[in-house]
Amino acid sequence: MSDIKRKVLNISLKIIIGIVFLLLLVILVALILISIWRPDTVVLADDNTTEKIIAFGDTRSSYVTHNNVVKMIDNESADMVIHTGDMINITTQIQSWLIFLFIEKKLWDDGTEFFATRGNHENVKWIFNSIFRVPDDKTYYTFERMGIQFIVLDASWDFEPMFDEEKQVAWLKEIITLDKDKPKIIMIHPPFETTGKYNKFYRDGWHELFLENNVIATLSAHVHSYERSDRDGIQYIVTAGGGAPMYPATYENEYSVIRRPYNHYVRITRDNSSAGSYRFEAINIDGTMFDNFTTSTKSLKK
Image (tube, rainbow, N blue to C red):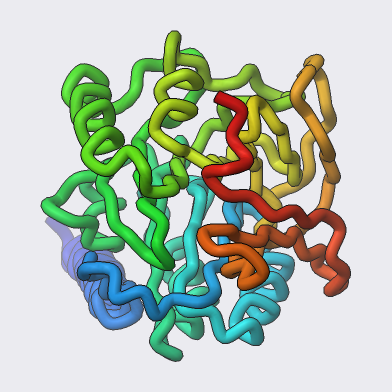
């Protein structure tokens, strides 16, 4: 081998080694930042001091819109924030997680509790679990706040099986009946009632199960819009306006009360005019309230 070829080879090897080193360094720094910025979700007993909860989802497409929505939520000084799924576009994109956490961390930096629902864009389960530190390493779990039992389910699409479906459904049917009289909210990424773009998520007998066990509302995302459907007093809510592009209505939905293609979030508070009642308010990105209602277990038509 000539001296020129040897020098070229040595330079090429040094460049390759340098690029690999820089990539490893970037990944290391990113992992450190993620470990620092990620929320510290701890499921404690309900001390009944929670007064305001914010729910929103599908933040995955527009960083600017996502940031603006989160700024508004931060100004709410809520006790708890619920994300209904689809945080980013691709689960394995480390840079997208960095941007997501950088935008969202202002919420938990102020002491706000943060609970996440796994969406179809969080399809790599171990990455989701690593970032959100879900209880017992499970993506379906339960906790109580503000006198409500929240039940978080793990389902991505209307046409696919749920994650670990047999065990998850058995767990749901057990956990939902432990305190039948307590008001409950189900969190699941695909909506149970929707006008589309996608079909609704359906499981035979679940509406009846919810009705019998005092589920007052469900919180979903997936169909980029705000929509509220009222079926026998259960308010099936789609809150998927955290930054993703809006979807048109494509299906009939006989239970739909209101549907709006707005970037938004949903505020949940106690309704002090009636014991055990809760007020829901949908807030547009311009600050206006465009839907509101009050519900309780007494509102259910059993």
